[in-house]
Length: 149
Image (cartoon, rainbow, N blue to C red; front, side, top):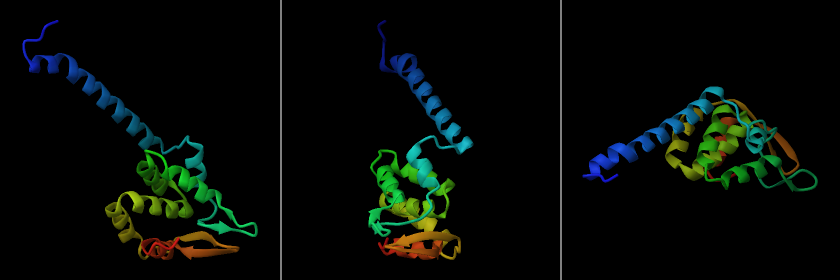
């Protein structure tokens, strides 16, 4: 088929494909947003992690599963979206990991979230070395803002 001009070609070929692609993306995103379910094993573990810990912890001095999962998410091309999802649906420990990830990718968004959390007393179970602590999310946030985690 010969197209007399570029507009006609756009109307008959490119636009329908673009519309279909946009519709598929919208359906995908609304499906995830409505269900709130995560089928990814790494994200599922991180959403329910039992403690917030960076560095070597415990008597054996191992890296926590939460940190391993955080680093796995951090290396993904979808990391920012994943961290936003973890922040939205995760427990307080997961939210702490998510805040660090969001801070790395989008400082403006991190500051927006931080402004709402400054007086938050939600309890976060954290671990530093062999010591397990119960800290407020606001306290964890303060450490994250200062690069201490």
